[in-house]
Length: 427
Ligand code: LRH
Ligand code: MN
Ligand code: MN
Image 1 (cartoon, rainbow, N blue to C red):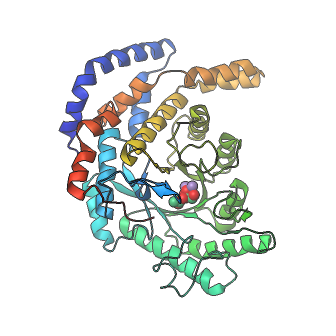
Image 2 (tube, rainbow, N blue to C red):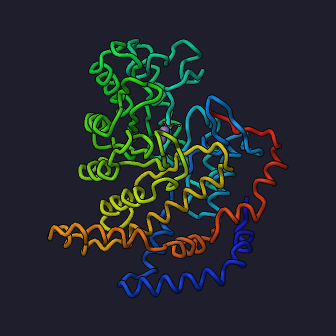
Image 3 (cartoon, protein in one colour):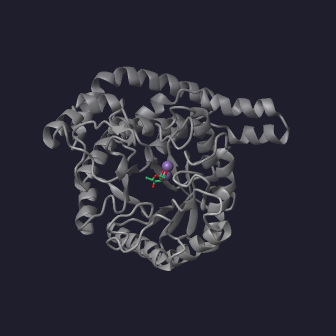
């Protein structure tokens, strides 16, 4: 655990400079008629879950270079998320992937998480690999898909896994299941495109019927990989058809990396919001495809425009959706990477909250494109860094999260405790 006093000690050297910056920024906002306190309060309320599967170094099929001191158990993963939360104050939940993280004693995991100040966010099921837990000890295989599989026994196994994940999630205190399906085909003619979709919808209907009344089911679309010809849930349109075919507790989850190049993601967000089917987000950034790079590291303006749509949907505040950071880091310390992503998100939220919605609507009604764009850019170009830092500080976290993680020697201590060769479980 990183005790709050140690974070506070890290803050002391930065405090005078931070306070001067904050004062200057607040005065600047006041001249624009914006109360800095409102923005700071909204930033304090914001939180995005950390995925249990991103706490170890990522890799590709060409290699993996572990960081050292990686979490060996789910309990250690929870400790790492608590460490991120100690420095960001905005990582107050963790999203589990089953069976990569299969709590044998869910009650104990729930308690351990709560004792670390963490809630269990959306559960993620896995029918894209053959795991003994999900394939009934090898009796079936997901090689040719799960819900879309031509074999009814495999489809049943896919349903059984997802309902088991819901049951587990209930015990853990979760309220949602996110379903990302690899189902699809690699070759024209491999399967019938319509039949595949119908089977997925049929299977999801059985899973949906198992949802407790206060739960939601999110369908996560992705255009390609591992299916390189046609993925069943390839895009937001397919995802929406699934959600609409299921019922009001089904919504769509948008992963920023799961779009074809140049897709207008903010418009997709606006569409799903318009029909109240926007359920959750997986934040990351990408240059080429599903790169899972640090949030805001490649196209921060796109991130701002997306978050601005969210704020518009929330009527001037961030709506309560299932936010998660879904990234993978091959070279950075994953905890530093998630902290950097969280800070980037805080910046985007802060900037989005600065948009003068009334003036924007006037410009739009007058067909004043230059003014409409200027209003957005004015907010985007404002330095919200001191507001985000103050929100973190008031949440008991760090003015400089990465600096604090290094300052308290978190990784060094984990290497000493878990070993330099400790590699994260799962995946
Ligand atoms: C699919 C995906 C999905 C996660 C999985 C680990 O590309 O991003 O969101 O469930 O990877
Ligand atoms: Mn995702
Ligand atoms: Mn992905």
